[in-house]
Length: 638
Image (cartoon, rainbow, N blue to C red; front, side):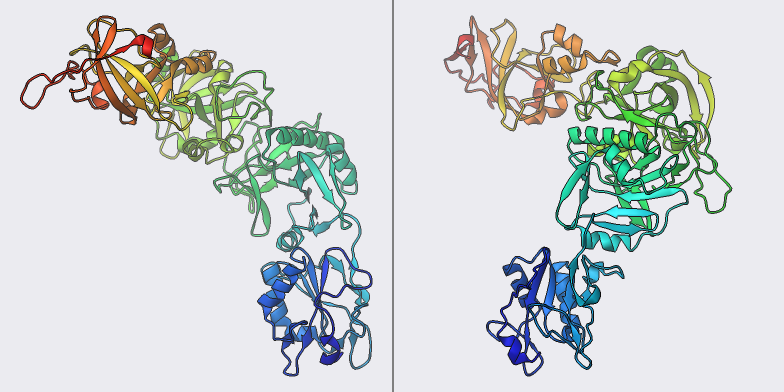
C-alpha cells in the first residue's frame, strides 16, 4: 500500500469484525520514511502514538498497527508496547495490507498470507504467545478460560494481569515431583475463573476440584498460588472453600499464610511474609489422611519433599542428604479458632489461625522459675512469644527459659499474627518457628520445666516444674506504671485534648508516685488538698474503668486494675506521660468552694508527681505570698 493511499485512513480504523480488547491504529509513512499523524500529516513519535491510543480508549487493549512494513519500525513500536504495557501487532517487513478493513498481511513479492508480528513490552517480554490467536494471517479472540501453562500445572489469569502473568510464568521451573501447582485469583473468598469472552465466575472449593479433575490430585499434593483477601469474612469463606477443596479432591492443599505473598526465587515459588522474610506454606489436609506430610517448607519458604522429617512438632535436625535443605521438620497443622473464647488482644482478629495439635514451646523469662511458678511470667504485653526448638538461637539471650505445653487452639503462628501486629511485635515474629500465646487462652497452656540454652541455641538440661496453668504478671510497661500492661484503653479518645482535674496533698505526703489520679469533673473541696486543672493530650492517660472491663475477664493476667478501682480511680495519668498534660490552674479549698490563686505561678505538670512540691500558694521572687484574687469555683459550676 502506498503512503498516499494510507493518508486518507482515519487514526482509529475499525475492522469489519472488531475484536474486544484490540484497538486499530492506522498510520501513514511520509516520503522520508517517517511516520505521520493520520490527521495532521505531521511526524509523530512514540509519545504521540501513546496519546492517540489513550485518546481513543485503547489504554487497556492490545494495539494493531495498520501500516505496510510495520516491523521496519520495530524499535518505535517496542517503545510503544513498553509505554502501554500491552502487546503491539505489526505487519511484517516486506508485507502489505491490501485492505485495512479486512487486515490480513501478505508478502509483497508473492502475495502469500503471513502472520502478524507480535511485539511484547520489553519489561515483560517472553517467547509465549499473546492474548490473540495470530495463525493464518488473522487475529482471532481465543475461547475458554484465561490460562497460562506452568511446568507442573496451570495459572488462571485475567485480562488485566495477562501480560504480567505471562512474564512471570516464563520464569517458573518445574517443582518437585508429585506436586501440582495451580495459580488462581481470589475474589470475595472464592476462586475467580475469567474467560476470554469477558465472562467471570466465582467458584467454591468443590467446584474448583471438579474443574481440576484432569489433574492427578487424589492422595497427592496441590500447591495453590493465591493471595488471601483482606476482609476477615472473605478470609473465613476462603478457609471453608480450601477445606472443601481438600475434602473433595482428596489432596493436601498448600497455600501461603493470610499475610504472605508468593514470590519467584530462582524460578521456584516461595512464600514471603509482610516484612519480606521467608515464611511457611499452610497445609489443608483431607479427612482421614494422616501421617507425616509429603512436603514441607524449607528455610527459604519453598515447598520441598519432606525427606528426613521427624515426628515431633517443629523440631529441627541436620540432614546429610545431598540436594535437600539442611533442615527437616514436621508440619504442625493449623485451623481457625472457634471464636467462642476471647483471646484478649485488641489487635488480633476474633478468629485467628491457631495450632491444630499440642505444641512444645519455649518462652524467655526475666524471673527465676520458682518465682514464675508462684507469681507468673513478667511481661508488659497481654501475650507471650513461644518458640519451637528450632528457634533456640533466639532464646540464649534470656536469663531463664521455660518449657511449655500449649494445647490445640492456644497458639497463633507467626504468619497469622504478623498481618495485624504492631511494628515492634512484627519484628519479634521474624521466623516461622514463633507463636503468639494470647492471655485469654493461657488457662490451657501449662508450665512444664525450666531449661538451659547454650550460645549455639541448643536446648540442654531441664528442671521439671509443677504443671500449673501459665499466669502473666504485668510489669515494665512503656508507660512506667508498675502492674499495668501496655495494651490498655487510653483517654482521651480521639484527637482532641480534654480537661481533667487532680487532687494534690499540700506539702510532702509519701514517696514519688508513678501515676496521677484524674477526674473528669472537679471533685468537692477537701481539707488539706489542692485542686489542679489540666489539659490532657489525646491518649495520654489510662481509662482505668474501661481497661478493667477488658482485662478482668482474662483470669490468667495479674494487674493493679482492681486495686485502682477499689481506690476510686477511674482515670490515671502515667508519670511517663506527664509532659502531655498542661497545667491550667491551681486552686485551694475555701469552705464549700475552690478558690483560684491567679497570682501564683502554676506548677509544671511533671512536678505534680514530686513529693517535694509545695502545693500552697507558692512564693514570689521577694519571698512574699502573692496576692490571691477572689475567684471561686463551685463544684456545681463544673
